[in-house]
Image: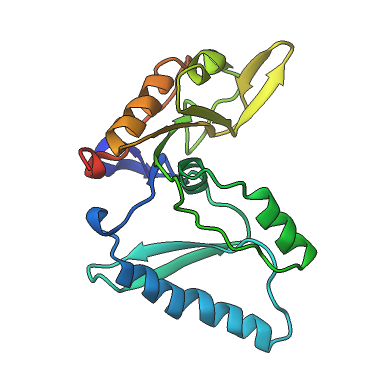
Length: 216
């Protein structure tokens, strides 16, 4: 969340993410089970009890404490969370459109295994000069097409506008550059390799995204 390497600087909406995580990366199954039982199910049960059942996408921002099974809710959003979602979805090979359509239509959601064929993914945010306090707009963005020529790379545009035939920064977090691979090292390497091909004056990038899982 912090702007600069080593978790220094002001808080942001998120400067990068890696996925998927499991016991080897400090995310035990007991923690996921606890969040499922203590957070999501009670919220959905309460909505049902109020005759206002939820149909959509419920994204919880969590803070994990020192214990393996204890987590606190910071916020709920009824939208995808960025940049976590880019990492989670890019790691899988599941077509989520049928799932989203089923939810929107009130139909039974097809059963899928999100981990079938899943790889590791890393996302690095390219932020504008002055972000998060006073992001500067208008900086020309170059190299997106060049970056996406690399295997296992996808550049997601966020705070981007098009002026004539060029892309320019139009928000604080401008791009989310994703890399995918068989290991976190490969995914992180691809993400940063693509980041280095993107040119934007004043760009801010953390260089330690995924540091805790490198070599995993």
